[in-house]
Image (cartoon, rainbow, N blue to C red; front, side, top):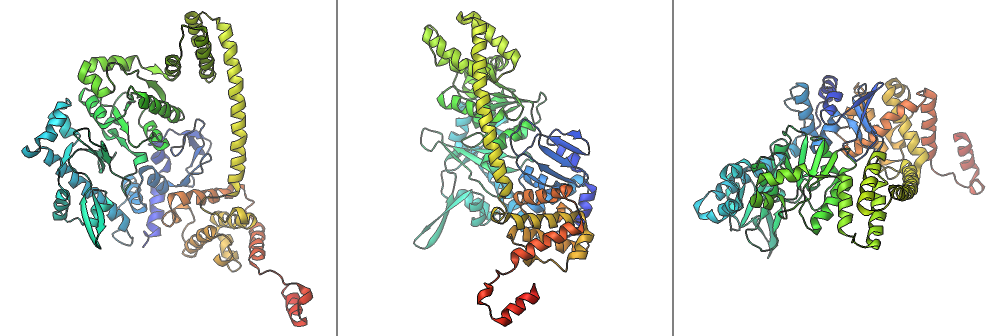
Length: 582
């Protein structure tokens, strides 16, 4: 069952989409709309638009769109019911007592409760005398009891089903524990066997911004493999969105985040007073993680490990983060392979000095190139300056001037020669950019005919456009629907997706519900809402006349009519019927 539509309408009237979205991203007013950098894809030029009049948003860059419920659902990775509850709380509106199906919400809540109980179990196990080896592991790594408790660290016993038995006694089923990835299932001899996913490992609970335990990382205490086992994606956890420690670091006062590689680095830094340290989860830094960080900081200082893998990860993170508009700096890690080792070996003062001397993006890239060339030879100087010119070609004029002068003094090459080489590199970059822009334009042109939610659109473009024009016109002018509803039915729609949209719209109009995006948000996924929103905003470019709608209906009728038979083979009676039909 859906939530009562009248309640959704009341909620939409009371909530201010501008205040909801502006709490996550910075918006600037542009006439009747507001614009900002899209939180759903990386961009430097704002294409994310908020429409307060219709309580909607749409990004002209990636196509994300919807109402305020869709926005909250997407930002917080919630299901529909949870998003409605969150918006209702923002608006100070009480949820209806019944009349909606919150099965998925209840499943998510069960998994969160199971994770919370598991975290308590692991922490209690860590403190038991018989598991002293696990506690000693953390103590030998320099952690004190207070920080262990603050992060809720724990220990998974070396037993096949101790956690399962504990949680079953709490009322959880084995199937729920499998869904939470706390347990695994194997089928042998026609019988299902369940066993703990984490065994004989120290445990790191992963906590979201709301304080929910959503996942775990488990580490061995020796050199055995695999070193780490992490929770797989579940109903409450998506690894590509995961950031460890952000629930604590988001409260830092200086709007800076220190990005490190692992759990222990984060915890060691927090213990040393660097409470804005975080680590991104997963094997590669993602756009989703970058967008999340940009909501809580103005600057990110990257402190990845001082090895080949760390430098590769730094280059990847810079490439992704550079699209967010964040100020970026990189620490040259010296005195240890990672932040944890540097603090344990040299103390917090050494790490604080490293932070102060962190290099800007340009300086870091130049330093990386420098380490790969031999500047004692002329060939090495040429190789370095060629690479440096390509780096500086993407910089501001001021940066070019500063670094050209510095490199000239250091390498004995005239600043004019270096600047000339930079201009040549800039020309090459422009040609590459122009080629890329042409490719993007061609891709956008192709995309304008395609729709990931409506795969039939490209091969039925004329009919699909007629369908969308009718939907947009009926949403803008409900009286048009009342005048034309006898002439058009869902069966006239050629594409299945647009048929669903029309069915949902016509049902609302028949029930006297005001047509806006909220009537779709319960029946369509956040991704599907992108296409619905695109259609909704078509109305601003239409003539909004009955004649236009009638023409669209004619197109659909023609498209759905059976093919005309060859008249030469028709009988006189068939030809007469066809003539009368015409």
